[in-house]
Image 1 (tube, rainbow, N blue to C red):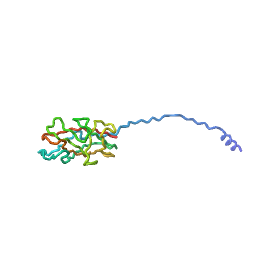
Image 2: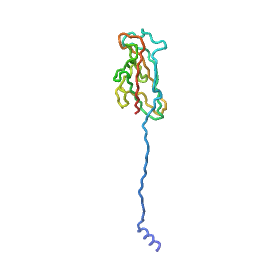
Image 3: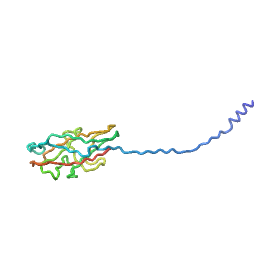
Amino acid sequence: MKNYIVLAIAALTPIVSFATDGNISLTGNLQPSTCVVTTPSVSVSLTGPNGLPQKTFTGVGSATTMVPFNIGLNCGGVAAKVYMTLTDRQKPGNTSNTLGLSANSTAAGLGIQVFLPSRSTTTPLTFGPDSSTVGNINQFSVVTVDDDDDVNIALSARYIQTAATVTPGTAMGVATFTMSYQ
């Protein structure tokens, strides 16, 4: 009977416990998704080594064949949506689809059009202000990078006749491109 009394007394005795509060600090450094342009300067020859005959142009809107070129990116395996804005260096306010000739060109009556063949081979890209802001005027999507390190953005360009007559000479245009990674 003594054993039962001890158990009954032990069951009625409160159990004492102790607790301590503590903190766990977690830190990290988040880096924005970004890519590096591996071809920051691209030179495209729109004519062969002997130039283009003036008779190639038969009236306003006539154009040469498109010449392909690439802009390379390395995205380091980071997923990103890549957008681009082309800006006419001679006339930064140009929002048309034709790049004007540089001031040091001696030809006249021509312009240059740029295409993104993955989007359209018949509709040229339009130019916009130099800005990487999301939704910039005439900004366009060029590629979605998943886990690829190296990406080539395929573009093409051509001359287009913009005036009733074409004056022969050198015909150069300069466009800048601004990338936005979202």
